[in-house]
Length: 85
Image 1 (cartoon, rainbow, N blue to C red):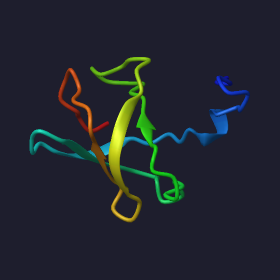
Image 2: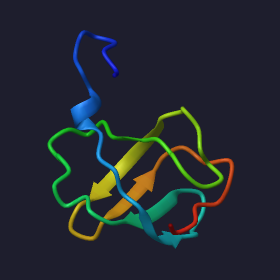
Image 3: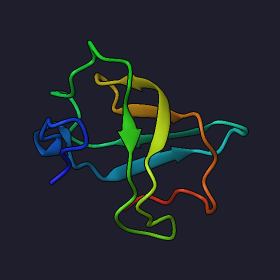
Image 4: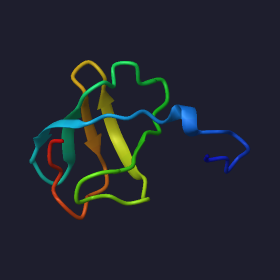
């Protein structure tokens, strides 16, 4: 449970799987499934990688989210290439 400010942030997390990757550098852009219900009113998204080569407790900052297409553009680089799955 994440309660740094006294707020339980666990319900704000949403799981998704990468379905496609755009390899245009320098930004990391990928598509994920099942984010149509993501709250887009806030502009402070984070991604935590829980599988694959980029597994880490680190939270990566997101620049843009398109819930219609499932596309996410990440500001920060990753140590390894993103792969579908």
